[in-house]
Image 1 (cartoon, protein in one colour):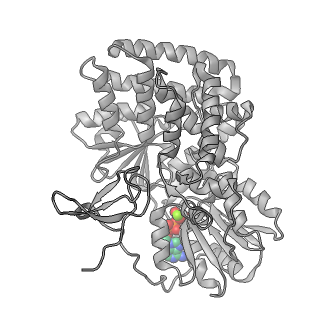
Image 2 (cartoon, rainbow, N blue to C red):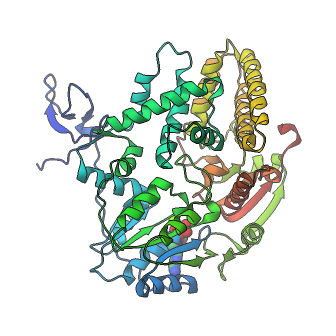
Length: 549
Ligand SMILES: Nc1ncnc2c1ncn2[C@@H]1O[C@H](COP(=O)(O)OP(=O)(O)O)[C@@H](O)[C@H]1O
Ligand SMILES: [Mg+2]
């Protein structure tokens, strides 16, 4: 029997060793770091990742005029290329197919959006070219330079040691400090500046409440400690260490990037380092789909990236990719009001758009369909209606659930009516602070209201007055399990990258929040455009129901 390939330890990431249990004689994988780490994988529960099977590049491809222009520039030009693409326009396909036009003596790497896409690309690209996610690319640079083990809980472990156990509200402190440290790292910011942290809290609706200084101190200490712990990396440090320790980066003749509108400054930095000795960058992205994400990307990332590339020795050319392969003509007509350059394929289907009332939508929506909404609270109310009708529902957003539970823990309610009273008092107190901030606080104010309204939806739909059953309901609703054969409900933020034949946009009349801050308002328009471009066939625009407020 051949020796099976050893898995990585599920706890600390170290490559495991084959051991035999003394009592039962059964073989298992044990962590070589034992007794420090007791990670175990039983042999019969371990399935190795399938080997990547080589497939051929698709043959007889006829590129659109725009694709052909991009491939021509890849083959013949020497400048950097930014492909200004739109939703469903064949972004990934266009860069993968572009590899055919590059001679095999060139060193080429392609950065994919996620692991699944990276594996798919690896199976198709010619020998000698490489593909990975940005994380795995950066991590291999780290591993070349230093000895590290992976621990996805590194930052939580550090925060646990920094937050005194007697603190009543550790979960809330942990969450705020955790987000701040990661945002500072992904945006290459100076954590010592109060203003930097204030801005991050505002932009990402991080609640620090009365504990601003305490949260900032914890975040600063955690940041320092995470750099001190050189031998351990979490997902962020897999990338951040390259910047932080100025590690050498493998050089490429051409470095490709997909979905570059979502790259944060740290990821942009890594790419620039990979071409610093004269390489070319070719990236595709849709600047209209840039929304503030947890990873810390910002709405202007493509423009900022273009400016940085201009500082290299090569010029930057921008090429369009505006024909959507996903959306029918009717949906494109609506999306054009927001992004005028989007086009349907000549042979696209006409598609179907219908405006309807909530009751009709709730009775029509079926497993496999997607329901999206700008706010989360209405989705919970809809989810309960559907569940009562005996339908299976999945609501996207595990961290929304975590945020709600941490709020409940903070409020320490005795029963559900106490919970509602305390939540309303919390809303009143926090709103006042945010309103005082004017334009800068309006996004956070919307998030606060949505959060409290979401919590109240759970309480209203709960059968008894036990806080624990509300907690359980929240956990179950956001568990994201049983996605197959379920109706998928999602905020527009989380629907990015998803598609479905039938899409229901709930509260369509409120799809864009009315904000006065131009940066926030631009984001609202982007969200509107993302919502309109998820459907491949039927699009249902659902009006807000009067009794939903
Ligand atoms: N020139 C082409 N000929 C045939 N199929 C294409 C062509 N360009 C793109 N496609 C197909 O269109 C679909 C969407 O492309 P994809 O690259 O996944 O889009 P995006 O990355 O913009 O979401 C894929 O199934 C892809 O194979
Ligand atoms: Mg893609």
